[in-house]
Length: 303
Image 1 (cartoon, rainbow, N blue to C red):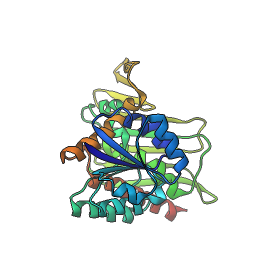
Image 2: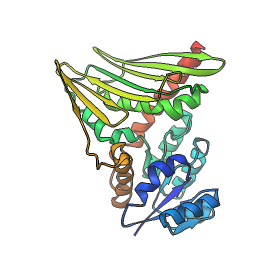
Image 3: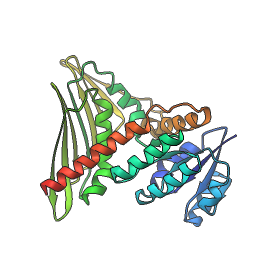
Image 4: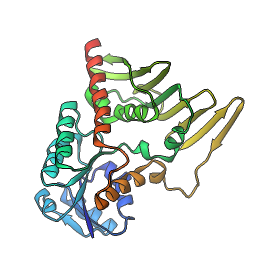
């Protein structure tokens, strides 16, 4: 039976991944987190049997791949350790919060012929896949706004805005010829950022306002024939001329499927189990990290 490791059991792991792991058949999951009390509690809740008291124990358990859900600051060390043990890796975004660190890990994975997959779940969300169907898109707008949550620029960009950047890249089918960055910095904190990708006659715009009146996420793709809009990674609206149609997903469709987490996790596990390639490569994810680093550079330069 395929053995898969899981490292870190924080909020994202508990909300987005553990319910998915608990339903996957023919995979033996092995868990490690420094908080052993939490480990035992979750093991009991989901009836997971293989709980490890150290990372070394997990590495010696025979796992072929591993999901990393620990804090961003721990990613570089843990990913490096797993790759050196010839273990395929899935890591929550970002790989690291510096482009050079992410680049070193991607190069190591490529050199060793191992998977290094990043958790960009929106690429797997059915509603966002429908946005990709718009013919000849000439404008893409992606917004992910939050209420009252300004932050240190690097954390703001790499831990949150990176989803906007990656979604822009996913939905925008044109080569990026120019990158324009604007933001509002006060007292060392970033309140909002607006990024544009320019390509000939097409434009992609990414927005994050952390000084917004509400939490929201909106993605729009516009073409000559139709415009498609997705609200909060779930509701799809298709507009053609004067006609607007809301495409509803099934009420029985699980939230984690709707948001792409189920498909993303199984894509990684299937790739590990069959020595296949996942739908998106480490080098593709690295391009997103490189743009994030450029955005930070522009924001710092402008002050």
